[in-house]
Every structure is written in structure tokens, then in C-alpha cells.
Amino acid sequence: GESVGLHLPTLSVQEGDNSIINCAYSNSASDYFIWYKQESGKGPQFIIDIRSNMDKRQGQRVTVLLNKTVKHLSLQIAATQPGDSAVYFCAENKDNYGQNFVFGPGTRLSVLP
Amino acid sequence: SQTIHQWPATLVQPVGSPLSLECTVEGTSNPNLYWYRQAAGRGLQLLFYSVGIGQISSEVPQNLSASRPQDRQFILSSKKLLLSDSGFYLCAWSLGPSPSYEQYFGPGTRLTVT
Image (cartoon, rainbow over all chains, first blue to last red; front, side):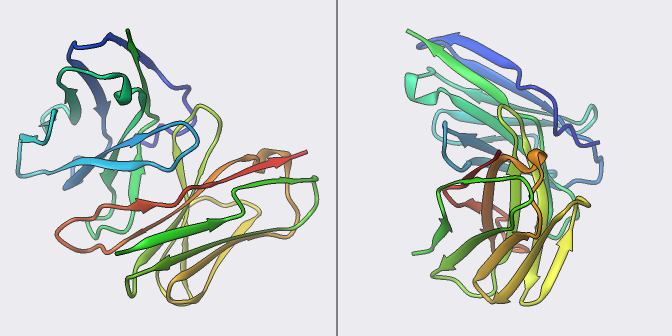
């Protein structure tokens, strides 16, 4: 179910290392997922998306993995940079019409110098 | 190109006062529109979404309401604010259903109810 209301987990990584942010989703029928990045005081920004007919999708320095068996989504960021520090949200398409997404609680990524 | 505007950027209101937050989208037609609330340090909670003028779906029962008087205008209102209404309010739009259902978010309004 929705996990809105939980306090944000935090991931701290060293600059240059790879980051892996995880997300569990609730609806096995969800067919579309998005990762968003939200910097402090700003609205979320799209990073990468994936459809349920795929297991993996790569972007620039980011990779999203989808495991439908265990309803798990992950975002991998290669060579993490200070500018990657933000809160990252996964969102699942709730109604298969692109109108209604359920957002995860978010993970705060802190990049250490 | 498309842009989304929200105002005001910040707002401090006393308990029991009314609220009106406005969101407008430029550069697209018939967008899906959304209102989210984000409590401090927490995730996004969908409040309302609209697929067309006058069509509003509510996700969470509360003392807030939404209206869409024009195609690219979405308004969030309350007759009497509660302390628990404090938060960061985000408006978003999308073209879904479409090849990409990405939602584009506005800059947000930070509301503090005192």
C-alpha cells in the first residue's frame, strides 16, 4: 500500500562511488514506473522511467532495474557527484492510464566529499 | 515549450482562514493536472487530479477542495485551514496516457498554518 507518512531513509555515499537506491512497490498490476529527483525546496524532476515489460533501462549515469517477482525497483547512479545529493522518489502507475501515480516515501542521498 | 507556474511561493496563514493556491500550465492543451502535498521530510501525497475542465478526482478526504475552471488552470482551496494543512504543495501536469506518463512539477508553494 501507500507508504506516504514514513520518515525518509538516508543513504550516504562517497563522491565517485556508485549509489543504489531501492524501492518496493505495492501493485503487481502496475505497468509503469518513474524515478524522480527532488532538490531542497524544489519540485521533483524526472530522471528515468521503465515499463513492466523491461527488466533494465539505462540513462546517462543512471540505471533502473525492475524485479517484478518481488515488486522491487532500484536506481543505480554511477560515479556519484555532489550534485546528485537530493531526495529520490520512485512512483508506480496506479491505474494504468497514466493519470494516477503512487509515490514512495523517498530516500535522501547525501554525497560525502 | 511547456511551463508550469504556481503561486504564491510561500504563504503563512492562521488556523481557520481560507486558502487559494493557483497553478497554471502554458504550452500544452488538455493536460492532466495534479495537486500533491509533501509534509516536511516525507513523501508525496496525491490530493487531487483532473483529466479535464470541471473533472476532479479526490484521493484523500480532507478539508481541501480543487477546481479546474479552465483547461490549464488548477486551483486548490480550503474554507478553513487546519494546522495539519501545513506543508509543501506541488502542482504537476502530464499528457498521459501517452508514450511517457511523466509528470512535470511546478516550483511548489510552502504553506505554514499558524
